[in-house]
Image 1: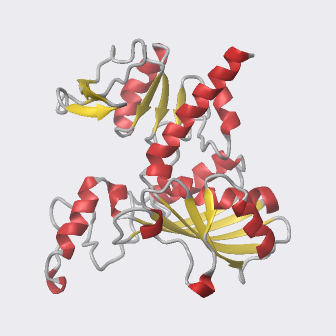
Image 2: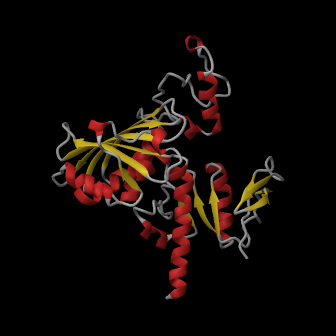
Image 3: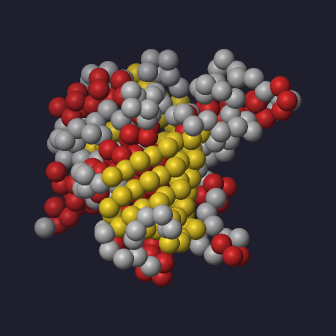
Length: 313
């Protein structure tokens, strides 16, 4: 029997939500909630994941976790199915989903890494307000409806400053070295997913007044000599990436084009003038889909496919 079990906090228990074509009642998450389940997708933050993921695993339920709780755990695979699906064969009951900006960036970078061999990575992210949840989207909508000469930060906003008509180079907490935790995720997670533990990575994360879809400016240095035609071919032949690169005709990826779209757009491909064997390019992807929910679903699909292949063989 196929069952979709919707779990949440006690505040949401009792609500009915349409799932898998049926109205399902939301239940409070407890230690017993995962009995009889094969897969569970967690998306409630690190605290909840740390509390319940191991309980689920011990009950035979494979956890796909969207928080940062397990991403850098050496026992837990960090997976983008188009890039490192082989890591799913090594899971021990918990699989981590990468940070949204990392996932979108690597969908453009990985095919170039395969072709030329990544040596150094410099990124600047332009992250949509919905990356901070419904509160982030509401903050932008509320602010743009007010007098632009008198915008003030609402107490319900998740941002430290007004976001309408503004940019905020500050996402997550600052560390002692001046980087934010969000910026360090780009470095650490890219190293793990690409299996390049010593690759040089620097990142600046910026919140922008865009409703949905993150954009990333990438400057990458490679081991082998690069050229734009080969780079374009690499992008075009990679599942999950869409080459959108005719800048002279005004064709390049933008958030409005890639919101609610499964593929990530890659454009503005050009030789980098500052890095040897360098390429500069621009990647855009829906952070709620490929940066979160879609990637988790793809992991679940890959696990089911692997089980079916085992059964057939």
